[in-house]
Image (tube, rainbow, N blue to C red; front, side, top):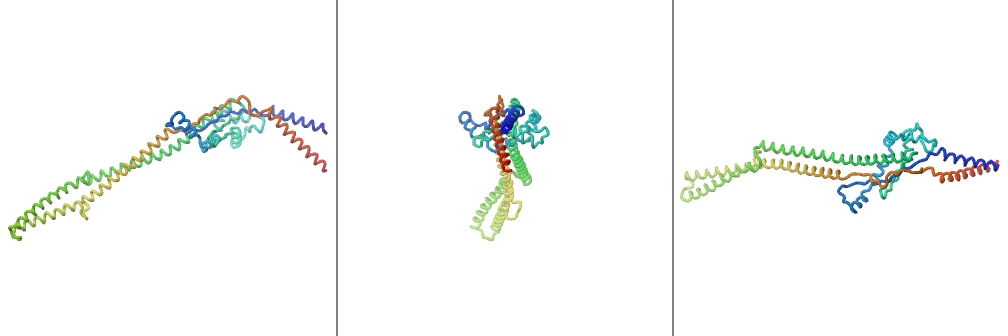
Length: 356
């Protein structure tokens, strides 16, 4: 019985060594460390530039965006098209470290996530990406491509956001410009209709006429005073002068009514109010247009000087030895675990036999 146990244990050892040496694939891991820098071209150089770099590192949100992008089926399809990655991962006989040639997209993605681990340091924004394949050169090439595509994706995502904002502001500028042109056209139409440039142009002739009439009125009143000094109030000359004075007063009232009369829609005050209303519309539309144009120019300037760049802290490495398996480490561990499992199973079998 003891001899059988020894033989069984020796067979298990041989099986483990045989599995690790012949079936377990050699996995080579290429690693890169990056941060996503929000670059501002106005940032000064030197120590201030270094401080800006530290302050504008990748946010956790951007790092997560990069991670989710890497794990998309589009990325896997690109890698498969360029490097035949799915066929490469299906080569080993080891079912724990390979996929089936007929694996579904979901199965391939799950295996791809296991072979391309991404770690994110939330404090520093440092992103560590590994690519594991069975060929050291392939691991490095795949990782380089992943980094290039990731940078392009982040820049496009940022560009889409900025383009949306600038597109909205451009529409606002266009709208305010159209409103300004309409307000200016309405003002010109109003001036043509009323045959004036400004209300002052219409008021000046009326004010001149009123001034002349009031001057004549003062003269006639002085003449009447002198007549009454030596003529009878009912004399024809006095009555004529009085009638002339009444006519002047009536004419003055009529002329003033042209400026501020309560009923006449053609009075100068109505034209002045309408003109000021049209002028205010032009001024308001001008201010709105200038404001929208200033905001747009500022947004375009900010967008032009800010980009997102993948800063390489450590370039993709060329692995010189496999990261898995470590034979001097993994075989002893597997032997110990196998021995423990064998002893535990033997103990269970012995206990069962004793209780029969």
